[in-house]
Figure (tube, rainbow, N blue to C red):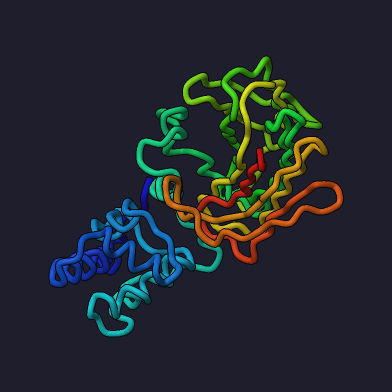
Length: 303
């Protein structure tokens, strides 16, 4: 659930001042979002709507940067909005906000359709810290293996599992297996529409707040029909580190390979850069910073 205003009215005042400034300037939220993007800050329309209605508040570092950028844009004195946000106690963790997920996946996304009523609680008890993915493209030019290692921190007591979703490039897979190296097998289900696999991977033990865990799993497909042209990771909260490696079979080495970032699904990729292959036909992506968005590697063949 989004955060609710505090009893002293200070947080509710933030929403009221923001709402009045938007009205006075005649600015729709999409203009505000575009302005923030020009400043290198990505927020969803849902998040901005929650701020002006008082349903949630700016709390994360990127959100506070957005508040600072909004003040001059709205014609407000420096600190006019920031001063209305209460200082949180040391170690305080914001509540899970589904709007942050929609900010990357969009409204009515495949993720939301697949998870259904559980979407508002999607990994609500965890924060991903580090993600390492190793992707293999086989001789048929199709991704047939994804090996993932994720370090997570519990943001509340009794965190038990990590939910993951992977979209498949072929609808004709003979079999798809998601396995873990240790512990009980995860609960896995395939969704023919949209062609994806969803799994709930046990953390190995119940985590108390602020405890960490490392999750490892491998997704394999025996598909031979279809072609893969890219792979990307959707990041809904900032990561400390993200490393993506894509290794190509010697008979399926692409002519061009690039890595990219896009603020949300459906948006045009930006920051496209050539991703050179090493002697093992592997390209990698290791961004310096990992704000929310989609990080990927794309490739093409000459024929």
